[in-house]
Amino acid sequence: LDSLKDPANGLDQKSEEVAYGYLSLADVIYKQEGDLVKAEMLARESLRIRTRVCGNDQVNVGPSCDLLARILKSQGNMGDEPMELFERCLAIDIKNEGPDGANTAVSNLNLSIFYHQLAETQQEIQRRVEYLRLSKSMCEETVRINTMIYGFNDPQTIGASSQLSIITRKLSEA
Image (tube, rainbow, N blue to C red):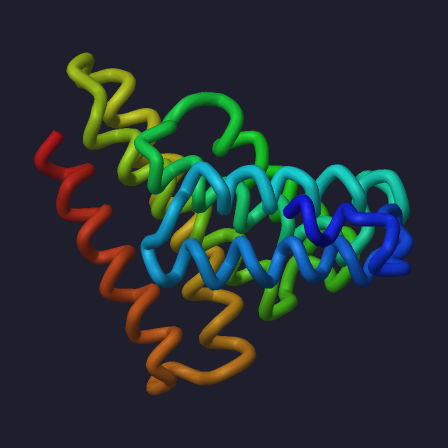
């Protein structure tokens, strides 16, 4: 991170290119299950720059929100911040590609998985059911969009349908 911030490298520290670099490096670290603290720092910096350069709801901001939320979740943070980041990513995708876009489906699925995992941490049955219902709703949207875009037999549709089946079963058992 310090080498990227070095003025001698000639990079505009407030540019989309630098934000993309931070995001890409954070993603590699995250996928390799490396230093998640460093990945979080890079993803936060990417989000900060992109928000300042592009605005709060532009398409480039969504991936930074999503990655930061996934990193926080991997660190065991199931609180408001990752939830708000997943929700923000979904809102950005809906604004920029509509309710039936491929990225909207991905964001719905990510939020569904987050709510499902959050439900699993709840001791109170009413809260667990509330999060499972939210998870089911998001997953149903994912299945609807994926079916429309890719068809019934596509692996993405099948995977989301499988996730929906699991959520529905857990909801019926609650």
